[in-house]
Amino acid sequence: MKVMIVEDNARVRKMIKSFIADLADDFSECADGGEALEMYRRSRPDVVLMDIEMQTVDGLTATRSIKTAFPEARVLVVSQWDSPALRQRAQSAGAEAFVVKARRKSTAEDGIRH
Image (cartoon, rainbow, N blue to C red; front, top):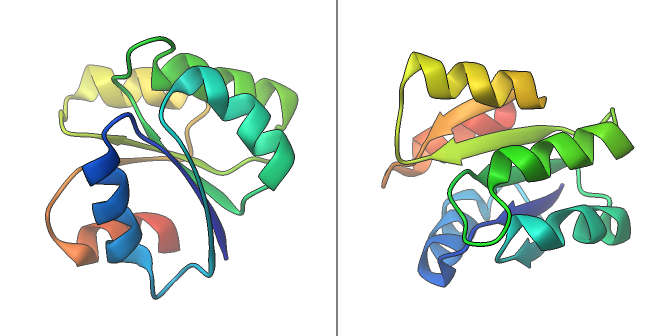
């Protein structure tokens, strides 16, 4: 499986990769939502793990851009914050799922499998 990780924190990207290493055999990464559309176009991943809060272009804007250009894209929004309003915004942007960041491997794996 090809997974694209869009996360501005390099340590978090590394942690996510270690959590899902059993599920993916190819990773692409970018540190900002502004890079996400072009990275998606080049790598055509099976799933995108998209952080919400990033410096230049936020994850919801990037998700909307990817889904507009590639309606078949599977984007999972990943956030340290959890609220019904945030989940609704992610869904409205086109996210397939909302995953709360956790330090447990099973949480990351469950988000990708479903």
